[in-house]
Amino acid sequence: MNQAANLQRTMNLRKTSEETHPIPVTTPEAVGIPSEAVSRFLSRLEAKNLCMHSVLMLRRGELAVEAYWRPFDERSLHRLYSTSKSIVSVAVGMLVGEGRVKVDDPLIKYFPERAAENLHPFVAGATIRDLLMMAAPHFHEACTYKFTDPDWAETYFKTPPTHRAGQIFSYDTTATVMLCILVRRVTGKEFLDYMRPRLLDPLGISPEAWCVETPCGHAWGGSGVLFTARDLAKFALFCMNRGRVGDDQVVPESYMADATSRQIDNIVANGDSEHQFGYGYQFWRTRHNGFACRGMGSQLAVCLPDHDFVLVTLGDTQAIPSACAAIYDALWEEILPHLRQQSSLPPNPGAHAALQSRLAGQALLTVPGAAESPTAARVHGRTYVMGENAMGIRTVRFDFEGRAGKFIYENATGKHELGFGFGTHHEQRFPETHYFGARIGTPYGQGYRCHTSGAWVLENSLVVICYATDAYFGTLKMNFVFDGPDVTVLMDKNAEFFFDEYVGFASGSWQ
Picture 1 (tube, rainbow, N blue to C red):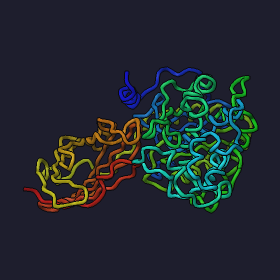
Picture 2 (picture 1 turned 180 degrees about the horizontal axis):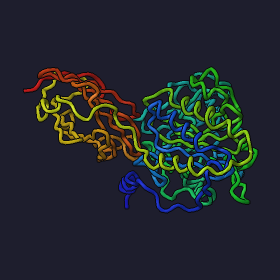
Picture 3 (picture 1 turned 90 degrees about the horizontal axis):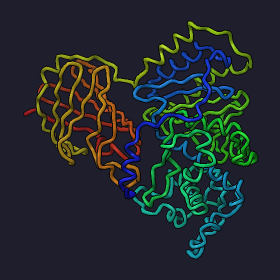
């Protein structure tokens, strides 16, 4: 099988095989947490309309809470986004333990071919430690590279620096990209492949776990890892255990202590109030002497060593900037007070059964509103010809049948159809096939898996929301307002690298 076909096969993976090395399961009460507190925690997330996919709570190495929102479950591979960075840090720690690199080595030592390129001294002097603690010599909005750049490493070495490395926190995913390439340079393997025999397999990390690639074919460890929620929980427990798996000290304890402690201040350079407590080696410090792996969209593994507790969340909350703060607030106010006591609670079968019943009924959020409107019969089957608009939408039509509808439209890429349910989701593939697949910059060739729902929020106003639920997560929101023979459309998106042609206003009339 050639590489392109293998990447396509990998991208199509949705579920993992049967789990190995399962985490022991217990009840919340057995580890000192009332089931009612867990229910209140979940209610607070729902009250904020957070699009959650999973929530796990572990204490004393046992899985006390495991919540999923359909279609996600314990075998669902899920994009971790920047939570991936913490995994890269552990890969570097493994190299340190094997004596193959030192954190105070200049990065350029491992790229001698770049030394002859008249490097700026700020770039030449940057160490592995500097990159680990996000103190590289560049300041840019997110990174030195653009997704259209064929060689992301070259952008690191050739982009003019803005300051001396190692002094100030400046979040730059290029630093993690270079650490991934460092692992490849030293070991001859991508970082997950290098970690597999000594760490990932002993932990029971899914063999199907994989990483999106950069345009030049390197693993994009800054954002691209896909794990299950249980995989992330196992990784978090490993970090809480200071780098040990059984009797094997896979990563030096001293490295893990440094990686998860405050190496640099980040209060000025980070606007998120929950992540202004310092930064380690690709790990964030939190309140209450904790540390966290953190990624866009509420991908979190929050570790509280003083309480032997881990919270894992996965979701797609890109549309809600305050989502992480809401999760932390619920953790501190509903769960933390019960962690301050070490004893178990008496069994509470009624409360636990109520919690389990709640968890069994959870599904992705649907659009709130009515399933019916007299407007539906009036506009059903009508084709609207749209005026010139930034989205390039030429025609729009709606068909309604029962508790479902179809948005049928034509844009620059052709004629498309997007189904949606009222009060439920319609699962399908989004009708654009040019979005990235397993490698950034290379089209997937088919649509992303997505779940779409709609509702009449007013008699003449239809809202449709589409959640991309593939290796890339994103939200597309659409509002259609009907007035006589006219329709006015607003579309907006929260997604990285896609849905870009679905942003703006349009107006049209039926023919």
